[in-house]
Every structure is written in structure tokens, then in C-alpha cells.
Amino acid sequence: MKLTVDLSALHRAVAPLGRVVTDFSITSRADELESIGSHLIKGLILGKDIQLGDIDGSNGILNYDGHQVMLYIPDQGSNISMVMADGKGKGAKRVHVAECKTIIGMRERGRFNDRYDVISRIDGAFPVFGIDYHTQKEIQEEADLAVCQNCLCLLNHRNFPNLTWGDKTKFIKEFSYSKFFETYSSYFKTLPKSTVGFQSSDYTADWPSISSKVRNELDYTCEQCGVDLTHDSKLLHVHHINGNKANNHRDNLRALCADCHKKQPHHGHLYISNESVLKINQLRREQNKFDVFDYNNLRECADSALDGLLQKCQSTRLPGAELGIVISDNGNMVAIDLCWPRRKVAVLINMANAQVLRNHGWNVFTAFDALNEFEIFQAKVR
Image (cartoon, rainbow, N blue to C red; front, side, top):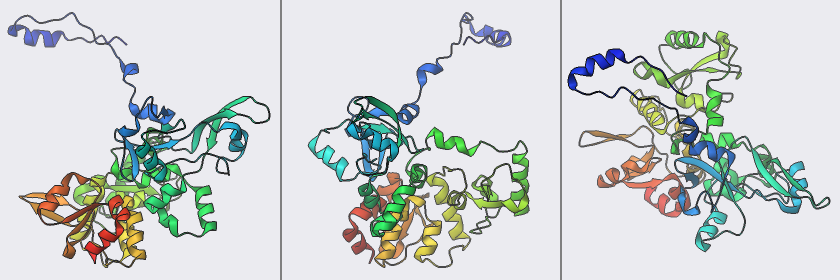
């Protein structure tokens, strides 16, 4: 697209500087700048488009170039018809969402025997293909594939390892990839476009004024946790209780801090940054909103990416941790996601400040390391 802009006033202003180039054009090259995120939603081939070594599993979840991703085998072979009928049934390939033993084995061997696709699509519909056993015809469709249970166990996601067989089966059937991505979104800078798009759709034209009025009425205070966000007003949202963004009746609206909002049903899959959760918990602590540091209180207020670890700590009866702790390092304030101050044990989502804390005598873990080296971790805490 060629742009025609009158720059004559600018030319006159800079003329005294000497020769000015005036014969130029601006051409859009947007089509050539398609982001890696849009490619990942469609799916990329492991070993061809993306190398296994480029996928980081150090936080448990899988990360490629700052994007949360999943691995799965699209070739369903002769089971393709059964997979199309029930993608979560026996014989269907599973979707890997974490650094489980399958992925670790692939890394150790330095190879993988099947074609894997790397994808960040979160609606549960995965492109699959195969040759039908009876007709011998190729089928290419989309199937609702089940998540790998080993991945869920590794992350202690929703206490999955300790569920009964029946509850596990129900959990897998009802598993939401979008909710899973949202739970661990603090490790990333954004959610996939297909999720982010939900945030702004279906609002009425007068929503900004309605939202502002509700927040003003409540003096910028969260109706759930009580944190005062007067000086951080962007962290206070207005939630539609029934999920209908066109229903702006006052009894359908609640003013909630970004963290409480993210944890509500019918919230449209919000992305809330790790920095925002840290700030909210710092303010909660300063305003004495943490009455008791028991695990129910912790799980309500902690970053959702830490929930698997918190459930493990609760089940093993570790002493309660604290939120909202900030330490000073030569005048720079360093916020900690979760910690046991008396034992100087910290858990961080963003490890950028890990060395700073270690310099102050802290033992620092990622949530994934704390889970998978739990004996060492709990020995530090007890």
C-alpha cells in the first residue's frame, strides 16, 4: 500500500540544514512480517521448522521463542476414523504440554521416531490425518485430542496425581487447553491471539464509561480481596458475573483486581502479567489483606502458575509461605512470588532476580524445580 502524505511544511523547516531527499515512498510489507505466533497456531513441524533443542522445558511447561507450545503427533494412522469419533479415546495420540518423560526421552536419544507438530492452538481442535483402515482412503480433519496424563502429573496440575481413576477420567474429558495456557501465562509475555481476542469482543459501546463509574463508586477497591488500587487503577477491572458482556446491569458487575478477575469463571480468559500479580500482592500485604497465611488463603492470592506447588506443599503439611515480600538491593526493590522468609527460601516465576536474592543469602527455586526436587526443597523449608 502506497501512502501519500503532504510533508511540505517539514521540508521547509529542514531546508536550512542543506540538501533534503524529497523523492521517496513508504511501502507496507505487513504480509512479510507474519509473526511466529500465527505460525504456531497453525502448527509447525518439529525437526523441520523448529528444532527440539529450541524448545525450553526448564519451567516444566514448553516454551518456544517466548510462546507457550504443545507437541503432538498428527498422524493417527489407521485409527483415524476412531480418533475423529472420539479423540480422547483409546488409540488416539496424546498432546504433550510439559517436559514429561516422553519429551525427556526424545532429548536424551537426540531423535524422535514420529512426526511431531509444535502448536499453540488452544481450542482443543488439532489437525490430524491418517489412512482409514476399512476404506484405505486418507482423512485430514481436526480432532479433539486428550492431554498427556504424565504432563499433568509432572506439574501437579490441579492435584491430578492424587485424583481417583474416575475423577482423572472426568478431568481429561473436561480438560480445557485455554484454561491451562491461562494458568501458566505468567511465564510468558502474552497469550495466543485466539485467546486474547476474547478480551475485547462483545463489549457495548458505552462500556468504558460504565466500567469507570463502577470503579469510582467503590473507590477503586476490589470487592473480593479488598485491596485498594487507587494509585494503580489499571489493575482494577470490572467483571461480568454471568459472562455476558452486553449485560451491564449493576447486579451483574463486580469490581475486581486483575488477579481476582483472572480466577473468576466467565472472565474471557484474561492475560495478567507476573509483574501485575506481584504488585497486587505487595499492596495486599501493605494493606494487611493477608489475615492468615494458610494454604487456602495462599492459593486464592498466589499466581495461578504456583498452584501445583502450593497443593504439594499443603498435602505434605509444609509450613505456610508468604506473599507480597519485597527486599531492597542497594535501593532497588525485588519482589518475590512466594517465600518462607525465616528460612530464606524463595520461589520465583521470573528468575531474572534469582542471583540478587542468592547474594542476600536466599535459596531460590523455580516452581518446577521445587516440585521435581521436592525432598531437597522441603528440607530447606522445614
